[in-house]
Length: 302
Image (tube, rainbow, N blue to C red; front, side, top):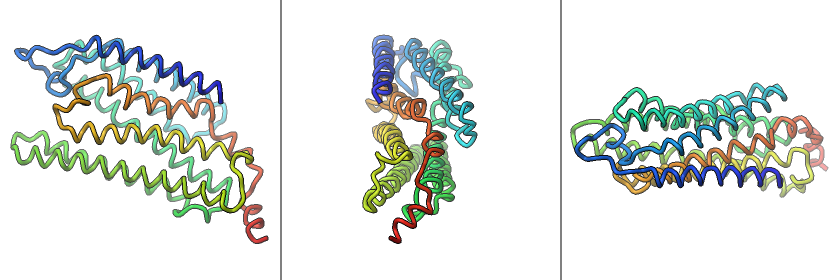
């Protein structure tokens, strides 16, 4: 626990250094020479901050791949792959800052920093299902554990499509369509946040039900999984809330036009969430469970 706290502190310090660099390096782009970057962000992206973030995500990806291969937990492959893609996305902000009018570079970096977090959430959905099936009684889950990942991934894809439709309308030159697009985009993001909030409630319900039946998670080999799920999910939720507020403020909003918040309230919470699995890879807790479903059912009957 202490080692994880120490590393998390180092990660936060590194991000603060990068964020501070983002604050210092950001400069107002001349209105006489508008670029794609200036039109969207209203600032010049910091190359130092992008390098620091990309480097930290790359190191995290290597550690996650190591964990995955050591445990042969192929079901969790989505996490290190997504982290690697996000690392590339941050590194792409460097050429984006050097070529602010390059649409391909802008699109690639946008996609590689916006899409990977969906895989982080999917990893948690899969872990939840495996935890219920392998460690405790299925009755603790409101939803059949085998279907949890499927339902929530479908929900995320649906909300992404809504956001995509809103983004398409927002790009219209018609003022009415543009306003409608912004509202649809925000609605999609809010629905995605609510969907993930429901998943967190699902985890809390399981936790509460297990304790109510007399089991103490901290004394069980599978106990850390509940803590890991809630800790990482809370970190991801910080990012979700930030994105809703950022989008709600509009194109010229304070959060969108200040790069430091992109790193502190978006990139950092996500990094802390995935780094949790570097120190507490769930396979060993799933495999070490001494409480079979049958044993828990017998205990309940007694």
